[in-house]
Length: 268
Image (cartoon, rainbow, N blue to C red; front, side, top):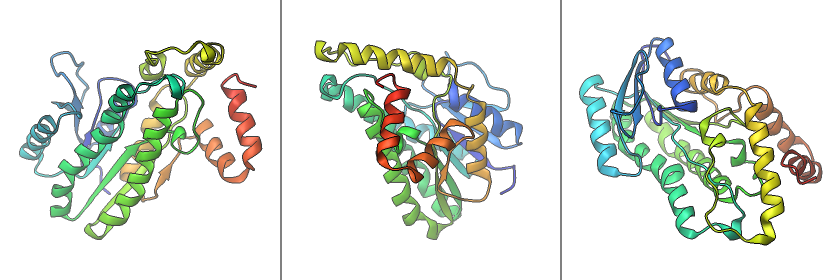
């Protein structure tokens, strides 16, 4: 794939999405980045900001039509917009779970459905969905986030089977802890059940510590660019912890993986 591709990245106001948009622009791509509110968004050199709320089909349709009107095609779609939630499964309200899935799964699906007709027409394209190591290795007190990323993984593999005959491929990027506001400011389930207080506090502190010492989103952004512009493969784990966890999950028995995971989150 050449570097003059038309690339759409969702959720570029901060974090991984912003870093990825910057890297695509540096590669010479024509980049469109989506934000909920262009008036409040910071400009990104070489990136055209498009107002789009991925929870709203009409907003997505307007945004994609604006991009098509300007660029005539979309070669790469990167779904990086996402939200998180911390809390025991029992504490999580159905409404909170639905809100999380509205962005992490249904938002991604809405954007894919808006972009696919254009990719099918041009008979080429690459869709890169940003998942997480929690998409294959669930973590305590993050059940709904883990579930949403497992759903993204299943959707991506199935979709790849369905669209490859049109010259379109789908890939996953699975980062581990990354120093972004998403995790630093992670919302917690509103309901609190005292029986979970001790462990929830320990896990929350462990997450904060891991995020604070985690690498900036640049490495994940580099992996996203490679997944989008390089030779196709389904799964891409950024160098470091994410790649190690993928290998451990694949090669080690379940017991040691479970013990290691609990230790990471302070549950010993």
